[in-house]
Length: 100
Image (cartoon, rainbow, N blue to C red):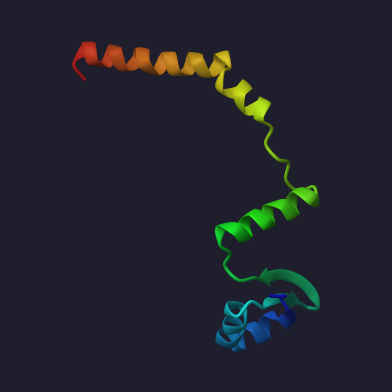
């Protein structure tokens, strides 16, 4: 289904909010302007599949960077993370010994 777009001012949006929301529910996008300049876009709430498509669009536009497997593995195996986990365990054991 191809999405259509309409343009409206903030004033008109306020006056006809229900009608614009009905349009958005049916798949239309609404561009909201203030003094002729775009300030917002109302789009239908997306499912997880749509969110994946949105994420891909943002990656292609250079807004997002995809995660790299190596960087995730490096983070999880980093000594800083291991130290923080160790210090938490030590603190819990100390609390247990002190009766907290």
